[in-house]
Image (cartoon, rainbow over all chains, first blue to last red; front, side, top):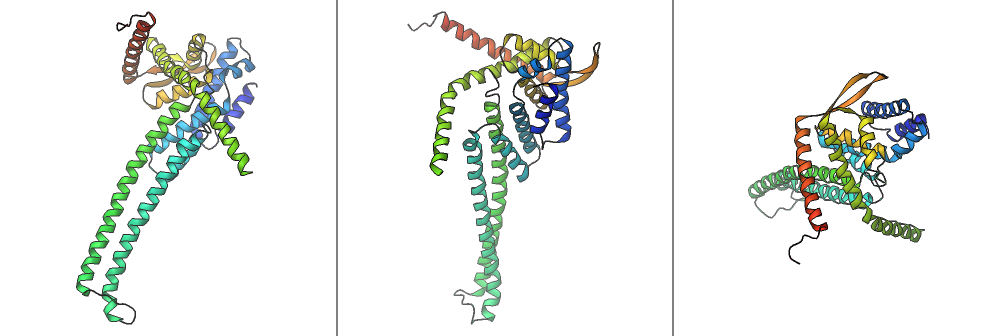
Length: 194
Length: 130
């Protein structure tokens, strides 16, 4: 592999990261080649001792994505970070994707539950008004005045549940980012360090 | 088909577990790598190639691994970079320790020296409870 092939491989494996970062990374390696050549080494020799461009690109990509997920909290960013971490090795199917799916599943279920409680409250609230008007469709066993207040209570409970979910989601997000950062640190360099 | 996939995965996992013995060694070298880079920069500002060259002279690693490390050190605020003209032509990117980088270097160095001292005392058979 010569300089051109190495750099082309590198940038093809880096595809998808911000253009500025890619330029920066490529220019670092370009500089490495240029100085190496001035010192009398060949392009092939330099490429050989730098190591596998794919593995280097995967390391760089994973740390970039995790860093981004850390800076801007968003579902898209965390998904990108998880996928970049998968590039670091087969093992991460179990150690990153597994926990991610579990956490995401639990959060979806908790949000659905909050939505369920809130909508039950809303239904009860309107039911209390319309129930007595359409006795052929509704049968409410308690006094409508009571069920109105119970429904308001249930709505509040649902909203609180929802707010609680948001806090929990944020906390789990931060925790998970810390975890994949730790994971990336453990795993990068496998097969890289001789 | 399913069976083949399962077999392949088990095979892969078994391979990774035996490989696990190497992981510690690799982790060890990587931690050392960070310390070496910081220690070299504590003496003077250097450019990437120079760092790679100095380190790979005594530790056998894929030289490219140092660049992701340098990027991480920069992101964590331990080093900053600047460009400087060189006699040979194109400007080179120099790395410089920040205050927190210097602090980190001191801390890691101290931990390392303590660690080595303890290991050495075992190697010399100086354990007292024998």
